Image 1: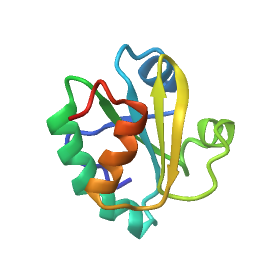
Image 2 (image 1 turned 60 degrees about the vertical axis):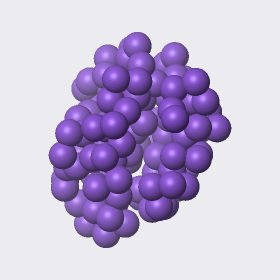
Image 3 (image 1 turned 90 degrees about the horizontal axis):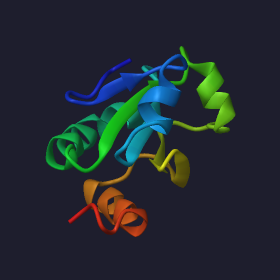
Image 4 (image 1 turned 180 degrees about the vertical axis):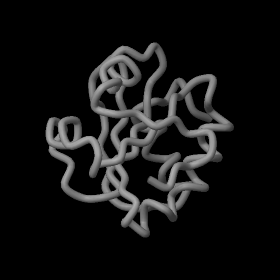
Length: 115
């Protein structure tokens, strides 16, 4: 998987601990190596993780090697972004998007965390 710098990788094995059990809200990118729009989002996620890392955890999950989690959340298209807060998915977004739009969408569900 083409991992974004500073963005943790999660797997089926550690998804519950790293995402569901996280104290911070978590942005999960469901991604794949063969997905050009996913690679396009790499710099956006890297910047987001660097700037908001104290208030938002940003992770990636490779859909090809982690089918259990991918199926559990009914992910069909890549990239799919899901925001988890208190262990529950609170927002799902499909497709690459400019940084500004991603920030606007995140601020709708995490207004107290993002500036």
